[in-house]
Length: 167
Image (tube, rainbow, N blue to C red; front, side, top):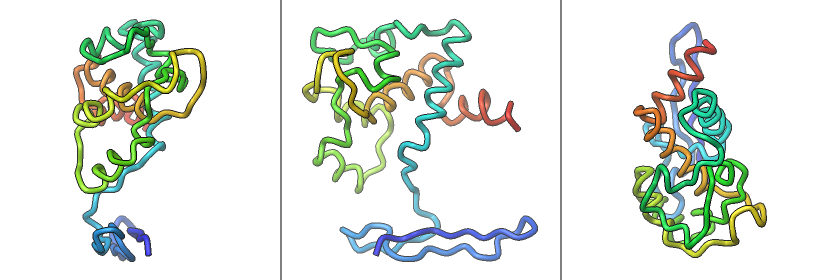
C-alpha cells in the first residue's frame, strides 16, 4: 500500500518517528522517515506570492516575457508572459502530462533546471492567453525565475521574504 511518514512531537521531543507502507510501490521500496517527498501544488501559493513580491519590488513585471529570464526557452514564436505562467494560460505543456517524464521523476531527483530541460521542447497545448489549463511546468519556471531575479535559492527566498517576516 502507499505509505505515510509519521512524526509525533511532545514537549519539543520526537516520541514517534516512523514510516508505514511503501515509499515506492513500483520498485517495492518500504517507506522510511528519511525519504524526500514531493510536496506538489502546496508550493504554488508561495511561488505566486514570491513573484508578486518581486513585482512590488520592481524587479519584474507581470508583462515581462519568459525569455527575459530564460533566454534559451523555446516559445515556438509566441510571447509567454509572467502573468501567463501565473494564471495557467501559457500553453506550455505541463510536465505532469508527460508520462515518460513522470516515470523518470519517480526514480530520480531532478534540479529545477533539469526538470525544465526535460519538458521545454514539448509541443505547446495552445497559444498563450487563448485558453486555461492547470499547469505545473509554469510554476517550475516561475521558481527558476525567482532564483535568477533574487540571487537566492527558492528555499532561501521564501524563508527570507515570506516565512521569517510572518514569524
